[in-house]
Image (cartoon, rainbow, N blue to C red):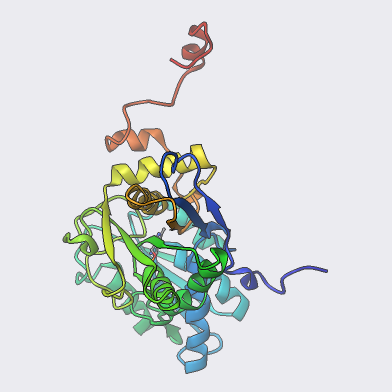
Length: 338
Ligand code: PMP
């Protein structure tokens, strides 16, 4: 019989798929690494497993312990999966800009969720970083993976994402593009690809306009899971050959096109990374193989990026582009939408 011993054993080995419609007219091959195929639905399953196992080995996490982490959702799901397998409790701290859908997913896996305001400085006592520190001090047996400082975060990508991409492209990858949140994905994958190719593979970071990685101050932007207002130690400042800043509007436009034209229902940070990849590919020849990593699926964003009223309310779409009454449709004799 062919089966996995446990759902956690299915983390990693995600597929690569070619972007056809979006890359039309561009010379390079543009491939997407689709991380929603991970069992928790995102790239973060990879780091969760490695961080927990390292903490068990070092004795920081003991039987019956509680995992406490500030997370925008995806890392929480990964940690919740691993925690279930190993018998730990989970408490997650989220900023309030994270969609309610995403928070409910964490609760569904059995985790507790604490919500904090987005519009406060990181040093404010109510910031999600400080609230999680307080919980770690007060809950007995608590351990904070701290994905923003844990070297096992980039290390997990050095040992899984990087080797997978090299193997899947048979060493033909020339450019790797990924968004930067903690920087774990780009730093670990980038370091592996640079080492194995003797420095030939170019590493391109995608960043929301306003975030520190592309020279901003951390001004609020709407795309979730990427960009920062501080420099995490998990981000290796030496790794990127180039950083491309992408506006919210462009990120969401490409996110919606990925669903409509490529059948890839993915999150807003995927559209941001893909927008950067297309920009990079536009300047390259037919021998280039550009790989963009798409961190998660789009179901957690149905009330935002994929909601026309939400998009219109921020000026990303003209009002009511896709909502029509039966009357509107029937009034058109040729059957097309008004
Ligand atoms: N996209 C989403 C949706 C994420 O949750 C994250 C992680 N914060 C990223 C992209 C960025 O990945 P990393 O933290 O490895 O830089």
